[in-house]
Image (cartoon, rainbow, N blue to C red; front, side, top):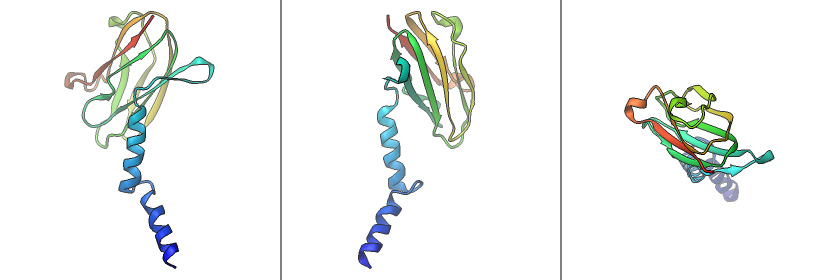
Length: 139
């Protein structure tokens, strides 16, 4: 009987929405934010996060020329965001963008970069509050 109660308590502590389960998930995902990995077909994959503090986490990442798959997750509770590259300030235009990212949403865009340099990006809703970043393409 005691073993069953202990087992139930352990499982409840790991359930989604519980403080300890949520903290573990956040810590795990935080460790991988901005880390560029290579997926199937050589596609470079990277994940950014946004929340209610008007920031991208991280606000800078580096890739090599080629295909990129960028995922942005909104872990905030109150703010909606978007994501776009500033083509006029980039070595080459990138048309891929996320038009709207509401609380709890995760969206992915795919694009190809060939020109080395810095590619600024922003949330146009909150650019005046400093929600900007840079993708660097190394040659």
